[in-house]
Image (cartoon, rainbow, N blue to C red; front, side, top):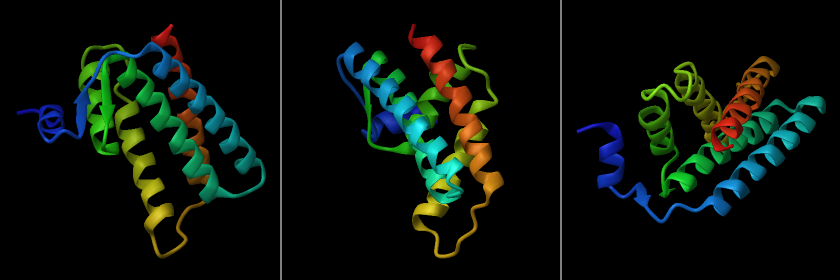
Length: 142
């Protein structure tokens, strides 16, 4: 059984009616979070930049799920969905999966970690990924 199948079986991804309006709203929110991340980056706040850039990536990913008729209950399963349905089918470059996993880990450390470990460079990596990923998802939705 694939990781995606496990996510569906555990109801961490749930089948729904495809919803173009939710998909459009999710990519709009992704773009708004990216702007917020850029403002945080300009202000020199790497932790906020990482959180907001990751939120942008997450909402862009959700746009694909909504369009395809899924809802999520797990950040991990969203990445597995993107991997199975978009990377393995050649619709999205494979480089995105390890980068998104890394961004998710960075977000986790900022949100739950007990030590400040994020750097300006970490923030730059995540925001660069968010920019490129949102652009690609926008193209896929068009």
